[in-house]
Each structure stands twice: as C-alpha cells, then as structure tokens.
Image (tube, rainbow, N blue to C red; front, top):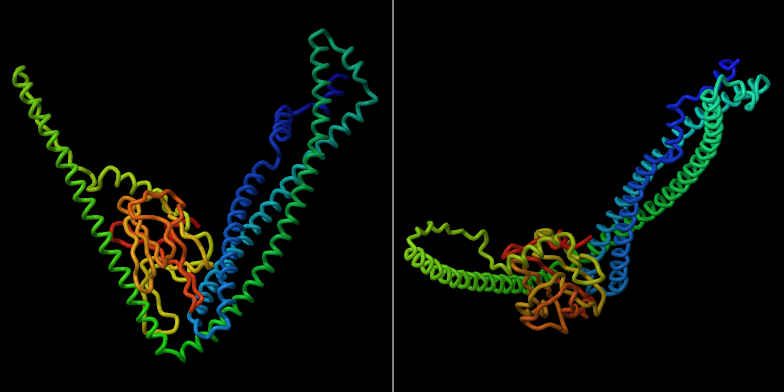
Length: 450
C-alpha cells in the first residue's frame, strides 16, 4: 500500500532544486542582461542624436539670418554644408538606434519563447502531480499515511515527505504565476520598443526629406556664387593672407617657447650636475681618507628634454584626449581640420590647422585645459589671438575681442578668455581654434569631447 501511494508522487530532487533556483534568481536573468546592454547603447545613441539635432538647430538659425543677404551667400553655403553633414550623421544614428531596437525585439521574442516552454513544462508536471494526488486521495489520507509507518524514523520521514510535497506544489503554483507575469511584462516591453522603432523610423524619414531640401538649397546657392568667381577669389586671397600671418606668428611664438624651455632646462640640469659633481668630489675625498674605494658613477641619460613641470603638464594634457571641454558652449564646426576643396572655386584648396566654430553673437571663449597664457596679439583679419601653453602642448584661440586674461596668467579648465568677434558685414560669429604638440598641428575634434 505504501509504495502504491507514494510512487506517483515521488519528488525528483534535482527538479526541486532547479525550480527553487529559478524562483530565487529570476527566470529571465540573462535576457535582462542583454536588454540592459541594449538599453545602454540606445541611450548613448539617443544622447548623440540630441547633440546632433542641437547642432542642426544652430545652423538653421545662421541660415535663416543670412537668407536675405546676397553678400553673405558663402557663409550661408558653409552653414548648409555643415547642416547636411550633421543631418547625414543623424540619419545614420537613427539607423543604428533602429538596429539596436531590432536586436532587443529579437531577444524579447527568444525570452518569451523560452518562458512559454518553461511554463508548459511546469504546468504539465503540476497537472501530473495533482492528478496523482487525486487518484490516491481515496486510498489514504495524510494522517493515515503517517500512522501506517513502521517506526519513529519511518514516521518522521513520511512527515518530511508530506512537508516537501506541500512546498513543491506551492512552488510550482508560484512559478506558474511568476512566469505568466514575466511573459506579460516581456510582451508589453516588446510592444513599447516596437512603438519606439516606428517613431524613430518616422523621424528618420523626416530627416531624409529635410536633407533633400538642404541639398536643393545648396545647389541654388552654389549656382549664385559661381557667377561671382572674381569676387570670391579676391575674398579668398585676403582671408588666406590673414590666415598665413596667423600661422607664421604662431610658429614663431611656439618655436620661441620651445627654445626658451630648452634653455631653462639645460641651465637647470647644468646647475644640478655642478652640485652633483661637488658632492661626488667631496665623497671621493672622504672615502680616500677612510681608505674606502669609491664605486664608479653611473650617469643616467634623461628620458625627456622637458623640465619636470613641463613633462607633468604634457602628461596631464595628453591624458585628456577626447575629453577636453569645447572652447565655446554653443555652435557647430563650420570648417574642420585639414585640407579642403573650396565650395565653389574647384581649382583651389585651403588648409586649416584647426577648426572654425560658428556660434552665437556674444559667445564667451573658455580655456579647454589648465595652462599659462604665453601671448595675446592682434592679427589683421583674425582680430586678437591667445596662445596658451600646456607643457609641450599649445592651444590657440583666434578671432577674439574683449580679452579678459593677461600674459603670464595661470589658468584653470573653463576660465573665460574673451568674446568671439562678430563680423557685422557677413553676420558671422566664428572662433578659430587650434591645438599643437610642439610645432605639429593636431585635429582638435580628436581631442574635444563628443
């Protein structure tokens, strides 16, 4: 009778432990990890998209201000070019967001399928046990089951068995309820994510239409400017002359700073070597009196020609690559680093040692990192420029007015330097910014934070 009663109700110990593990540690744990990673990636993309759309907003304002003025079509063209590039980045960004959502939806589908399979398996086992209990219900009740034991130990085992059986049934019921909740949550999440995907798709299509409008406007302005080739060439030559003056002056100042730093370091080392030589001579004399042989001196070759202070400042600046603050708190890059084809004069290429940042009228310029002001000088056509030293690195800020710092002043990150100059004729407020390592120009966009 005992075997007939308990055989259909035998509890698989491994299954029991597995079910407890599932209940305590969340059935969908792995799925949640994947979802969290996907969410982090999507949030990052969303943040980038917002920044790009802010840049488009800035260029729209410039375009709107310049639209009615024939004399500043080139400024308008540069703004539209910048807007086209930014809009293309937005479209690409949204495409990546939609891809991440697709991955998330696929993961949700997999999780739902897994949960449904688990639910079916647990429901089947639960039904099987309930049926077994029902069949044996008429044969023996719990009390009789315990009283029919052959001894105390056997009775104790039967009591524990009944307790485990009760726990097992409760656990299965709770698991079924929890899994059903998980499935409902996952389905709702998937529907929300799909809705976001549809919204993003609409935004993407809207950006594509706007891009087509921008390209048509670009073609119209190009056509207008191509009829003014001579005027553009005169303006280009004038700007190029001014820019070359700035480039030469910066090169002279940096070379002077390098030479001066080298001279100071050589002098410091010479004095240090004299002191060391005197100390060694005294050591040799003292050892000779004591009859001690002085070991040969091993001279260390300095790893760098920089002074300890300049070496530290250089390392500090270098550690901030991709993390430097922007010199202005608004605007967009109107001309990037390197060699560029002129937008209308196809036979002419221009070179930029830094970046030009178009911004709002009255915008303050800030130091991108701690350093020392080494020069504040005027250049025709470039207004005032400031040179700041950061060890062997230098930053240059040009097209400034209302300078607020002095030569020799020590600066911290974010200190106000001056105001960006506004060309009222062209209605253009544009900062020119450069970064150098010694005499080598670096691309500022690779150093400034995204």
